[in-house]
Length: 337
Image 1: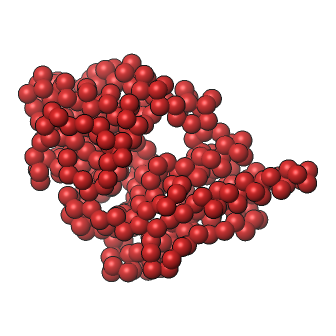
Image 2 (image 1 turned 180 degrees about the horizontal axis):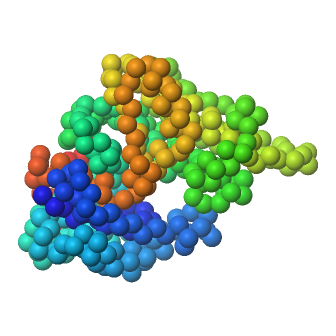
Image 3 (image 1 turned 180 degrees about the vertical axis):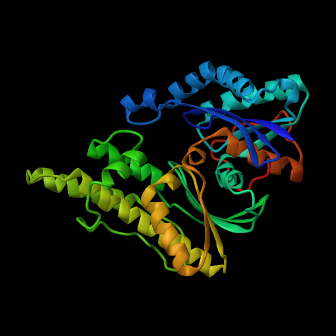
């Protein structure tokens, strides 16, 4: 089954063709990073307008690269939430029009479930159940994947997501946008033990995250330095901040896995490409005897291949969506659509 999938939940315009939920035939991604960099973050209206301009060309590129025609496509998958509502509507409207005109199924996909499914593309042998840490600009979730359609959120952020904290700290350090790669690169030149930033572990028997206090601590540190006219070592701040985030993410994930006796862990989302997170999670999983999976960096960012993978499992387990499918910016994980 060949599914053409569309992802426009934020500022990446992506179209993919995925076969049977596991094989990527093509995965075209147009990034708007250069456009939004001067604003220090994504401007929703600009993102939506660029999706309108670029999406038809990305569809053509995907077909050309694959050597397929629209007649070879069996279904259309599309992310319909969560995300920026204007951006979501561009992809959703296009997917509806294509499904209707081609008389093939339309399949709605939850964006975060798509991130989880990125691991299915990377590891053909991977099957549920497993625990996934989903870390991105808008989400920090610990999700128990019981099967391809059953997701239980065991922990989530109470304030800032990990990726959001990276972006904000990067901005005040003058490292630019997007913050994750910038912090990661600067950290390699810094001392992660230079500054003792706080780790918010919250309740020991709960698996929620909180990064707003850490973010405030970094801002207060920088303000104190500036008031005293002291030199700020940007690389040390970046490295110390990153270590504080990663230690909490790893500790919470391992503790959660042990609490439910889960031997398999996945990580997904944009922040899962962070080099320190991969290093520390690999070390911790090995120490605890846990199997660890994480996708290639290109599958960590927002991309349509992950949507195509999840669309396949949504379809074979629940059928198609109808044309009343709507964009839901706050769509809850596990909601069947």
